[in-house]
Length: 53
Image (cartoon, rainbow, N blue to C red; front, side, top):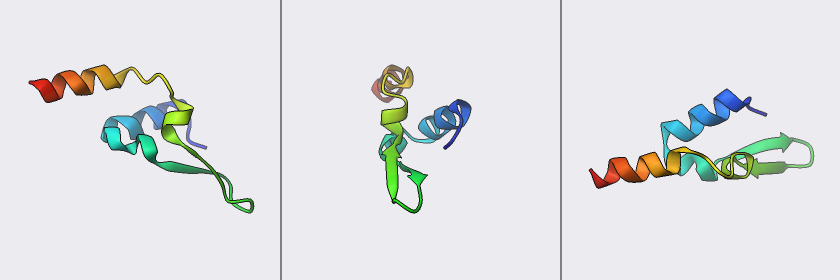
């Protein structure tokens, strides 16, 4: 499981990474997606502002 700083970094690399699957249990093939780990990510507004210009 990536630490909080690494989760934030992955989101900042590309907003589309929010759908990235992260392995929780290899044997059970259990995963979680990044946006489930950071559901209220602060950067969505900043990305939207940057796209507008």
